[in-house]
Length: 222
Image 1 (tube, one colour):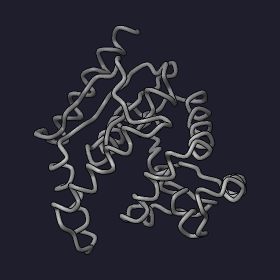
Image 2: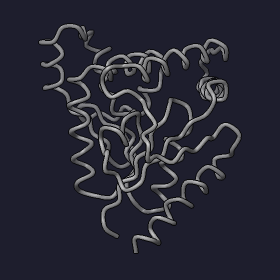
Image 3: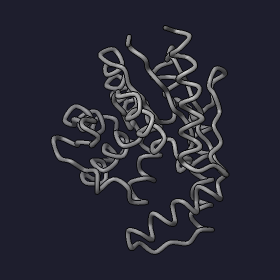
Image 4: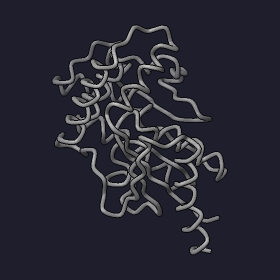
């Protein structure tokens, strides 16, 4: 099979990462979680206390940082940080820092390099609009803010973290607004993206819907 790049965009908690992983596994190609890449760099910012408004300090940090996604895990300077990047603090910092052009330039370049080497499923906020505007297939995975908040609350409860669904929903809606209205690579549904709403669908149903579109494309491509 020639290289196929599948872009999956959408807001946090809509299920795009879970769907992307399943789709990648069914197709036998790599899955790249770009959100994890931004979260990993956000963790580095928090650890170092770097001021995002200090251009020189940020440039030095970017130069001294390696973020890689391999074997289904995210690595920060060689350290597996899978279990450290899903906190609310890291999420908030990732949302803020990912709007900084220098940060995006570094990570987008890394993501584009991956797409030149191999077929992949990549999810994030600007995959179809910025990273791979010429992707063979583009999806926009979405769900209501309430459903996404309830899903996040379940994850937090399982992790033993205190949570309030109403507060989580407010934070999600604030983040959505920020992601959609930022100057650099805002979250958008591009014109040629296929929208998948997971609000009332099971994971199996959502994956089946996405795979239906992919199989149709592949059969026509030959």
